[in-house]
Amino acid sequence: MTDRSRVPEIVALYWIAKIASTTFGETAADMASMTFDLGYIATTLIFFGIFAALLAAKLRVGGYHPALYWGVFTASAVAGTGLSDFLDRTAGLGYAGGAGVLVVALMAVLAVWRRVEGSLAVEGLTTARAEGLYWLAFLVANTLGTAAGDYLADDLELGFAASAGAIGGVLVALALLQRLTKAPRLVLFWLAFVLTRPFGATFGDLLTKGADEGGLGVGTIGASALFLAILVLAVRQEHRRHRAA
Image (cartoon, rainbow, N blue to C red; front, top):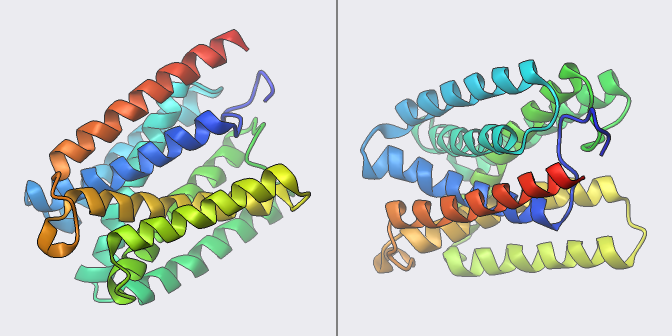
């Protein structure tokens, strides 16, 4: 990562923070929309507003600031969950339909990014334009991951535990491919990036849903507090690492 880079290096700590952030995104969105009864539309609008405000601040200040970066990321995860639930349920597209729309949207964003910037590099970004495309792709990917996780758990009737376990197994396989082979690193990154979102979604649902729905009944407030604490610790460690670099 260059000194001017606006984004973090992709190391193990990144994935810890990412999984904590995306799982928190699932549980916090459910907490707002269902536990606090705000509904999907209000939840989506609130967190899109937070995401837009934090992103504007991030693009304005430039550089990589761990707390601000992960604030933007977490807001995109919560907003993406709300948007996915709105598309799938309120708009009536269903999980498969919502996921299909979002796959096309992600491919379109990546195509524009590749055409404009000449690559899909996710490290060493130094311009506001490249970072803007980066965050747009991340927002769509987070939204897609929620729909995909719900599709596996509900439409395919795998349940939350089996879905999280299956996706976790694929993520382990991708990590081994990255470590042991010369498979294209960018392809592995995007596969892992998209899949960590349904992993977070299904694992979050496993914790928050009641036993009658196949969950552990921890609840949205307790699960959100747990993953927010993990995220804060990871960001604190990343801040120390960044300062020492």
